[in-house]
Image (cartoon, rainbow, N blue to C red; front, side, top):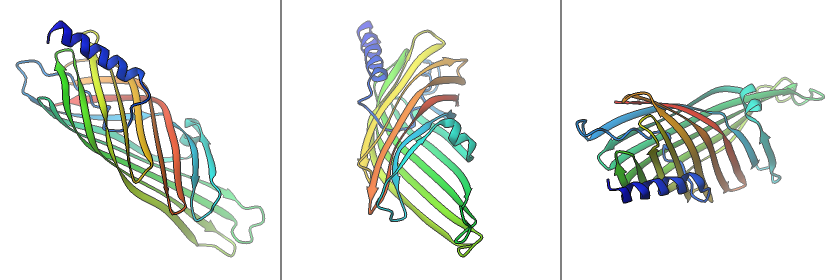
Length: 263
């Protein structure tokens, strides 16, 4: 890579990290080290991660015409969290890559009713799944990093279940949810500051089932060796889905921590 290519890569990554106009989610957490010349041209990397996100926005379900405002901190979510799993993976061959990202969250809460006639207690359970599959091509690729153009699809599925305990509605259950697919496109990149420290980021945007679907992040990372690396950064993800009275218009944002194991 000439000094002009290095300069262009550094500028491109800087613009990517500083811009909030780009967006979408294409497994950006996986940004493996460029392989040395004696290494094979292909690699596989797996990246479990933790995202301490808050959520804000509005939703409308169960045919209720009025929207409900959402404004929950990560602490609020953690208090009611039943289970969460987040991981990303990437298969890379020379300049080409196949990328996957999966997020699953299940939260629940309950409350006693004032009079207990229709029900003594109401349980609410919410599940969210977002899965992404994309392909990328490195328009800039060299020893100090890469800048990939990425395209793919993201599948969303959200579901809310309300259960009634006691009273006239004892044992009754109602459910409402939606599943949709969005096409996604954007950029992801990595630049080595030193042989150990690097910066990475992504910006993607998409549409399809949702009016808009976007994801941006900026990270700083440390490469322990050829196999292990770790990142810490900040991520924001938004989606606006509206169909037949069902509304899910939210923004999730917060710090993110991840580790990558490269094979």
